[in-house]
Amino acid sequence: MKLNDDNFYSDKKGDSLKLILSVLGALALFSLVILAVLMLNADKLSSNKKSVVRVEDEKDLKSDDNDEGDPFPEGEYTGSGLTSDDLDFWNMYGDKDSSSSKKSVSPDEILRKYTSDSLSDSTRDEDDGDNADGVQAVERDDEGTFNCADSGEEELLEIDENIPRNTYSSDFFRQEGNELQYYSSGRKVSSYGIDVSKYQGKIDWEKVAASGIDFAMIRMGVRGYSTGAVVFDERFEENIKGANDNGIDVGIYFYSQAKDQQEAVEEANYAVAAAAAHKVSYPIVFYSEEITGEPGRTEGLDPEQLSGIAKRFCDTVNGYGYRSMIGASKHRLSKDMSPGLLDGYDVWLVDAAHLKEGEQLTMSEYPYRYTMWQYSSNGRIDGIDDAVDLDISFVDYKYR
Image 1 (cartoon, one colour):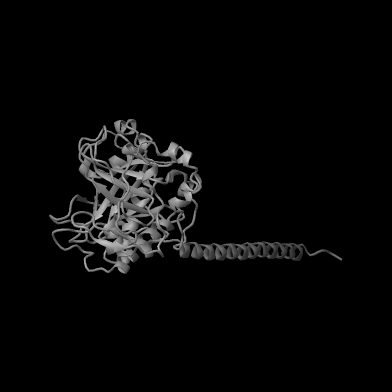
Image 2 (tube, rainbow, N blue to C red):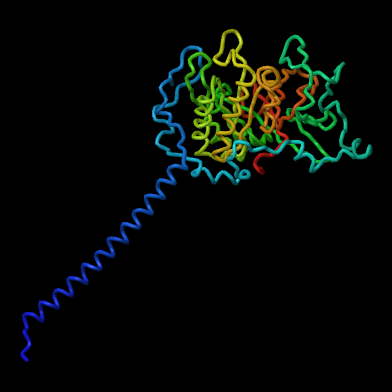
């Protein structure tokens, strides 16, 4: 039988076309599956990320005559796209835990490693040394009360026995020059620090480091107490870079006048965005003060509301993997806030004595837990022309 060449080649071409179409169909199906998986994962990732509030989204950045400092430069910190995932590397300074219910380690737990309630009398004598170079014990007529006044007349409050107390003793403080130290079992368990803002002017950080300063709390910004404008401390970048370059551990604080929790989150986001480009091993602080002479934005808030605002700031900071802290005077902490609600949050106690030469520092009467104490408002440090606040930290945060 004679082979029909036309039919033979026609059948071969048809088979080849079917094979090509089959391969193309399989590739198309595989591509669709891959595309679907990528889209699902993209949705999941985007739902888990929360963006830092951008400065360019703020509408009220202009300060009036009552608010110090310059506004954020236009576009400052914008376009960063920072998220909590981007800041995971900060867990090198502490345990990663973004839970809002996170409980920080108290100074009592840290000091317990070095201190025993059963210290012998001979050990205590060796530790105590000459207390004339330390701090005076607080004298109270009634151990169930404490003076919560920052200055002026005495204002006694009852001590709430349900709130955890600090266990610091005047017997274990020493003072060498400007530096206040805390000892336990013959070992210094405190760090020596300062807190600064633009008001200290140009700082020679090399000299500051040589003077023995371990850490610096640097003001990052403020919210105006009348307009609510967020203002950037004009020396923040200069100060934080200078401290880091000279081996001084750094924390930052934001002077808050947030009147609700939404503003507290904004402030926390600004602080985290400002910290992101620098090494920050000490806490990011919600710093709150009473405004004297005229009404402030937080006037009228009850202790529960103001405590809630402070906690929301801290929870937001913790969520980005940083350490947080609440800074305030003993009156602010005791009367304007609720110490019981602040349990579990690190506290920077601002109870600074303005000592004259030859006067002895008296231990703060604030009875509840705190991990840092601003003990002087008129310290003198080489490298800083004017007076500066001095601080003692009972926890070395760079190891937390």
